[in-house]
Structures are given as structure tokens and as C-alpha cells.
Image: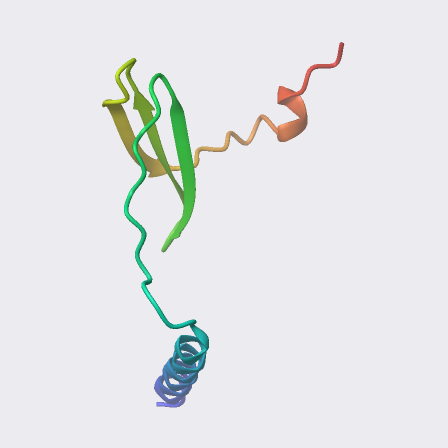
Length: 89
């Protein structure tokens, strides 16, 4: 029962926080129209998912049309690190 009460209080506090933050938003439109995709480009965005970061990747062709779009988790190999990918020359 105590755990349920703690979860309830956490949910209440989260809603209070959201109400405070929403009240701080400036007036006006909150949606921008999507931009055109650039030709022969790669675009990537990282977002937080419920099991960690997720990457959205888009590749466009020479006309700017979407050639490939992939959504997936960020794969990190336990045998590599960021320093492994840097050139040592």
C-alpha cells in the first residue's frame, strides 16, 4: 500500500509540474509547418524513449524525396567506445 501511495504522490507532483510549465509557455502558435527535405541528405534526431534513446534517421534522394526512414534504438557495442572511432594519425 505504501508503494502505491508513493506512486500516487509522484503522479500528483508530475501533474503540478506540467501545469506550472504549461502556464509559462508564451502565447501564440505552438506548431511550425514542416520544412522541405534537402536533396541527397541525411537527417537524424535523437529522442528519449521508454527504454532509452531512439534514433530517427532519414535519407533523401536527389529530388529531396524520402528514400529511407528508420526508427530504432541506438546500438552501442560493449567492445567499442567513442575513442575507438577517432583517428589517431
